[in-house]
Length: 164
Image (cartoon, rainbow, N blue to C red):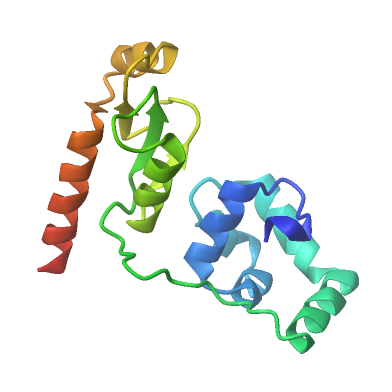
């Protein structure tokens, strides 16, 4: 959806919208109140999204994409689940066995959200060597700090808990 050029909607918000609604058509049909139910979508973004999808040029574009056979549904990857849903992670420093991008993809495959900045909304900071200022801020805010090993253990425990 980021490639559609929706005002005030970046890559993370587009993923969140698609994950919440499961299809572009469902996002297009949503009203402001339904859009505001999505995490990190406020009044201004919701109105912008709704106006974008109500535009005749966008409706025409979506018709052309459908006619061309473009998938308009959320694709579920093999091995995905929602065990980390509702949790927000920030990754910093050098992890021992994976890069930050791989760690972020792992978190997202399990329904977690990854952001680039520590805030009071952050659930966990995943920190490796040379963590720096993000670690300092997380500690100041009382945010739990995980090592890569602890992250993997958390995922394993959450997956097991949700499998029951």
